[in-house]
Each structure stands twice: as structure tokens, then as C-alpha cells.
Length: 464
Image (cartoon, rainbow, N blue to C red; front, side, top):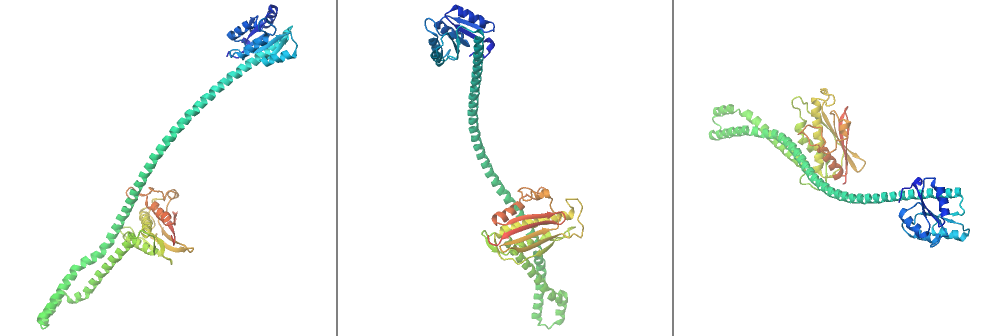
């Protein structure tokens, strides 16, 4: 299809009368259009197929095939069916005009010709032809764009399928990585437990050392006393207490009166040490509860006391550290259904963190870098009470320097810690929240202020 430009249009004039051809050609030649002529229908069809004019002025009455048949053949051919045809005729019968329009003609010019009318009609139909070509070109361009878009959509669909497949593969990889991470977390949690166990064993070893020292240090003395008493007994038996001077000499030598007075004290000391060992052993068993893997009604105060006993060595004064005062404000609580070993681990984590905070605050305040005043005695306060009729509350507070709001936002986040490397894994509080909230259906929260320290609040249902 030629470019749509009216100034360079071509017009084919078909008429068997040379005078008509001359008149029309002369009238149209001054407008820059290319003028083609033919004197019969057959020649017009051949020339139209070859030159592809933009407009055909076709005489109706011609020898051979007339204008109607010529138009019919032009419209039947795929090479010429889009060319506009204007009939030229002296006929005024309305039926002939209708016949021409039905064959595909776009207009009629009546003979004899009126030049202005001819020019106006030709110009109009050339413009319509130009617009038609332009629209056809645009439609073709739009069709190509649609085809390109469909091809792009097909490619995009293919790409989406490939991406979906890659996402599925990546999801599977991430799922496997998540499983591996969970396994690693279990190992980390186990490491945390081992760290706590090491701390526990160190405390137990420290507490056991004193009563064992009582016993081990007093046993040799007790043996000497007993040996001397046995020798005195033998002397009394041999001499039948007749040689009083020898008996008195021996009594003075071994300080019999002191032995008689001190021996019961030694035995009492040994008994006290043994009792402390027994109590410590029972507390350790009560704390760990390794033999209890099911929900068990327990006395919450027993778990708190056992944990305090195990941490007792860290509460005592040493060097410049004045020691930590523990204030118990226990309320009347019923037995609580829980996993006692896990709950005691929560008490251990919170109390150990409180002790760490108080130890650090007596050295220097992390907020201002200054040492705390000497009259601020480090203390931990433990309060228990009923909440409504179905829950208990345990509050564990210290009067350290508190926690900043920035740290508070990440306090229970796994792996988050403010302690130096090697002193904490950042899992203690996250594990504690897991135990309290997921395992026991309770709630663990923290309240803090730089003015008065930190308080952890543990809410537990009485019946799980």
C-alpha cells in the first residue's frame, strides 16, 4: 500500500470518448496529481492492477465491458478492491445509481461535467482515500504492536513459570536451611543449658566445700581425742584407778577437760556440715527435677528457694562487692501445675541476670560511668501473690541501673545480648519467655527504669 499523501495521488480516468479524457485531464492536471487514462474496461483493469491508482473515474457506457462490469471486476480482484471508484454518466435513472453503489462505487459525476463539482468530489474522495490509507497503516501498526505484546506476554508467562519453578526450588532450599538452622538453635540452646549447668555446678561446689571442710578438718582432731580417751580408759582399767598421780599426769597432758568439752562441739559441727550437704543435695534435686517431665503440682516457693540456695555463693560479699540482700515477700499460693525443672530454669536465668546487673552497677554505672553510692545496698526483691482466682504472679526485681528503652525493644530477641563476648549467648531470656508463655500458657514481661532498676513479672495459670 502506497503512502497516504493527497498531493502525490494518482487518478485513472476511463472513458471511450477522447474529448472527455482531454477535458478531465486538463481540469485535474494543475493540482499536481498524476493523471492516467484508459479507453476501455479491459485496459483500465490491467492498468489499475499495475499502477495501483488512488482514484478511478469510470465511465458507465463503454464498448466491450461497460463501467458496471469493470467496477465489479475491480472489486473482485484483491489488487484493486480497495481503490475508490467514481462513476461518470449521463444517466439519471436512480436504479443505475443504486446499482453502481451496490457494486462498490463511492460517488457519481454527471455529464456534462461541471469543473468545480468534479474537482470538489475528486478532492473529497482523495482525502477520504488518504485518511483510509492512514487508518489502515495505523491499524497495521496496531496489529503488529498487539502481536508484539502477545509475544512479550507469552515470553513473560514463560519467564514467570521459570521464576515460579526457581522460587519453588529456592523455597525448598530455604526450608532445608531453616531445618538446619533449627537444629543449630537446638544445639545452641543445649550449649546454653550446659553453660547454666556449669554455673550451677560451680555454685554447688562452692557451697559443698565449706561443710566438707568442717568434716575433713575435724575428723583428724576427733581421732586424736578418741585415741587419747581410749588410752585413758586402758590406763584406768590397768591400774584400776589406784595410781591417781599417773592418771592426773596423763589427764593434764592430753587436756582431758578440754577434750570432754570440745568433742561434742566437733561432733555437732560435723553433723551440721552433713545436714547442710543433705539440704544442698535436696535443693539441687528440687531445682533440676530431671525425673519430672510431666506437669506436676508444685510449691513455687520451693523452686525459688532452691534456686537462691544454688546461687548463694554469688549473693555473698567478696572484695569490694558488699553482697546482695534478698528480700522475700511470699504470699499464700496454692500448688501450681507446671514443669518444675523448666520453671526453675526461668528463675535461674532471671536471678542470674539480676545478680550480673548488680555486680556491674557496683563497679560502674553503664549509663553515666560513675560508681553507685555506697548507701545503695544491692538487693533483689521476690514477691509472690494470687492474681484473680486462677493465676499466680512472681515478681523478681533488683535495684540496679535498669535497662534502656533501646535495649528493652530487643530484650527477648534470641541471640541478643549486652554482655561481653564469652559471658552470655543471648538465649536466656528468649528461652525463659518460651518456657513461660508457650509451655505454661503464662506471660513474661519486663518493667525497667534507670531510677529504680528492673522487674520481671511472671504470670502463671494455676491449672495448665
